[in-house]
Structure formats: structure tokens, C-alpha cells
Image 1 (tube, rainbow, N blue to C red):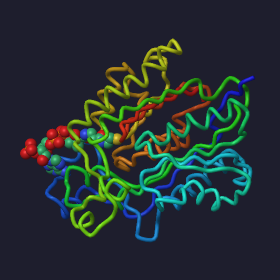
Image 2 (image 1 turned 135 degrees about the vertical axis):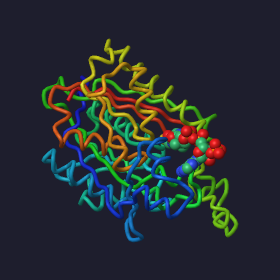
Image 3 (image 1 turned 180 degrees about the horizontal axis):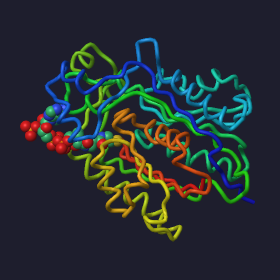
Image 4 (image 1 turned 45 degrees about the horizontal axis):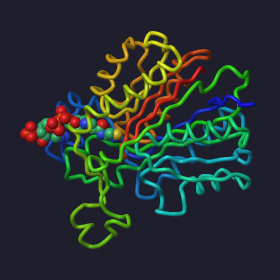
Length: 328
Ligand code: COA
């Protein structure tokens, strides 16, 4: 018999220096007006030199465990979605496992870009459904400030650092929890958003560092329409499977990449304004961390309430896209 998986606790960590649009005006040829009008972002956080992805992920995970009342030692599986791990290896998930005092479980990372949290949620759900795991900690974390070209105004104003986490476990009543999930990818679009150097295709060299090839390279205006279309496909696929319309949703949380992308998607899905949770103004695009950070804030602010129908939708490098429908 299948066990339904539910989110038992959430957490987030955003640390470091708050960088305003005015701060960025002093670094590149940009303006608060341009950034606000084109993206909706006002502030993002850059971690300091001593802080790495596992530090943020551990804190977010600790909060999720605390909300659920579960000990870190009892987690069966740690899944971290990130494109900015502490190291190429070992996996950040294993570092988090150690930090949270766990010896019994397993851990791995996956690099599905901004869909990293929803891919982790989807994988974790399968392990709980089959009874292989009782508790899965799904985390999305990024320290994107460490891979940003601060001379490229097309990217450096958009991204920020942070982590968000959800502890998954068996549904307390068998009815609430994750109703359905969807994941998809299309590798033909990979060149539109990538970090060219540092892997086996283009190993680190003096030349790659000099030419800023270890940083985010993005064709933003090509990504924009794809983001809207793919997240629409992800959300409508689940809505069709579950027989839902936009009006049935209590809370819609999409990947926080650009306010205009969120608004276009909201219009296509016909979800009213007061059902859409947005916090891109406060954190920028934190990639894999954006959905779990938003979800944690919505839960702690009482916007997501018990019994609510919540739709999550993401889009990211790969390209990857994903969604989850959750009865809270
Ligand atoms: N400040 C001022 N001007 C800037 C700028 C900045 N930070 N960045 C780019 N510009 C300029 C461009 O050089 C261009 O100038 P030009 O017309 O003289 O050539 C102009 O602004 C328009 O650029 P464009 O890229 O067409 O703007 P846009 O309306 O598409 O907005 C993004 C740019 C990046 C905000 C937008 O395309 C976007 O958000 N794309 C999706 C990115 C995304 O979601 N990525 C993550 C996916 S997970």
C-alpha cells in the first residue's frame, strides 16, 4: 500500500550582506528604476567569504526539523538541489547530514537549477510512498554570488543567496500531503543558461578564470518566454490530472525569477492576485532555494493554512521544469 507523503516542517536561511539596487548602481551601469521595472527585485543577499552552501542548507534543515519535531538523527534521506555546492565533491547533502548529527541515512545532490527543490521533493515523495524512507529532508540552496560576474549587468542584478528546506514524512491523516508532482526537462535549451567552465568540458585554467567562464552566462530575454510556457505546462498538467482550475488554488508559489514572469503565469492560470505569494523583491532569484524560502515564509506568516490547496511551479537551467500540488 502506498503512503501519502506530506511536508511536516519548513525552514529557510538567508544570511550575509543585503545588497540594494542602489548598491548595484555603484558597481555596474544600471539603475534602481531598471531593475525594479524589469524584474521586481529590490534587495538580495550575498554571503561572506566564510559561508558556503552547506552552512545555509544546514540552518534551513534544522528549522524544518524543529517545526516537525523530528531529530536530525532520524532522517533517512537528504536531497540537496544546488548548482553552487561547497565542493565538486563530496556532496553538500552529505555535509548537511553530518552537520545535523545523522549516521543512519543517505544523501545526494542533484543539479537541476532553479527546479532543484521540486525535483528533490518529487524524489523524496517516491521514497516515502514506497515505504523505503520515513523522513526525507529536501533542501534547495544557492550561493550564486560566488559564481556571478559583477561586470555583467544582465545577470549580476538578478541573483542572490539563500536556502530553504522541507521535511517530508508520512501524511499524519493519510489525506493531506503531496497530491501529485510533475518533472520534465529539455537538454536542447541548455546553452541559454549555464556556467561554462569548471567541469570536464572546460576544466579550470588561468584562461577560464581571466575570461569569467566560471560565472553565470544567461540569455535572459530568450529564457523569459520559455519560463512562462514551461511553468504553465507544469501547473496545468497537475490541474488537469486533479480536475482543478486556477480558482481552486488557495496559494500559488512559483519560482521567484522575475515579477513579470510570475504575473504572466498567474494570468494564464487565472489565479487571483491574493492567491499568489511573491517575495522576489526581498531576495532576488535564489534559484533552487526560491520556492522553499517562499513556502517557509508563507507558512510562518499564516498565509498557507491547514487544508489549503497549494501549487508550486518551477523552471530552471537544463532546462528543467516541475510542479507539485499539495493539500496542506
Ligand atoms: N540595467 C540596465 N540596463 C540593462 C541591464 C541592467 N541591469 N541589463 C540589461 N540591460 C539593457 C540591455 O543591455 C538592453 O539594452 P539595449 O536595448 O540597448 O540592447 C535592454 O536593457 C533590454 O535588455 P533585455 O535583456 O531585452 O531586457 P528584458 O526586458 O528581457 O529584461 C531580464 C532582462 C534578464 C530581467 C529578463 O529577460 C528576465 O528576467 N529573463 C528571465 C531570466 C530568468 O528568469 N532567469 C532564471 C531562470 S531560472
